[in-house]
Image 1 (cartoon, rainbow, N blue to C red):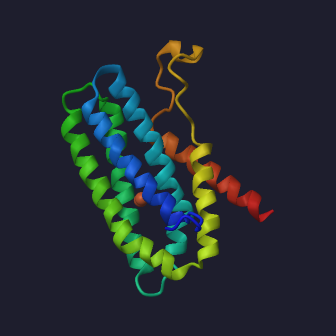
Image 2 (tube, helix red, strand yellow; image 1 turned 90 degrees about the vertical axis):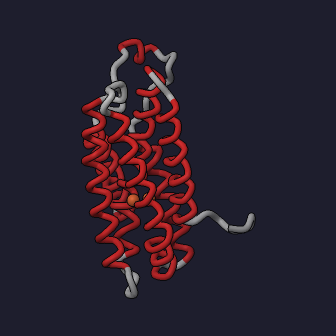
Length: 189
Ligand SMILES: [Fe+2]
Ligand SMILES: [Fe+2]
């Protein structure tokens, strides 16, 4: 990407992949309360990212006649599996001794999944969809990130309760997906 070009959806998704990778490392390195917070941030980002891919990106990548359908099918399977594992880890909790093994397995699976997208799906997307449409799509992916529930700032009054604010992964995924669908409906109106 040159300075004069606008970011397209693939650029935004690649940046999110880097962020996801960094957050996995942060959770591994952290402990105690900080670890819980890092894990919640990761749950949120994964929800934002995968929901945007499922709702906005995969349907367009499918249009690539050469590989789209098969490639997307495999990615959806991987995403389903990752969501299940993430939900299990959330239930176990980042302080449990069993957490680390499952978390390492999830990280490896999610990073392999991201690599498959980068090498197979994103090239298919750029083949199938015109550049100006991919630039618009970048805005929609970024908007999805703003619609997701956030953890309040550590010093804000509501965090005094010490509750998990972001919520269980499946609920976060559903909320982000619904927000993306509502926004898509508004665009069609
Ligand atoms: Fe994905
Ligand atoms: Fe991805």
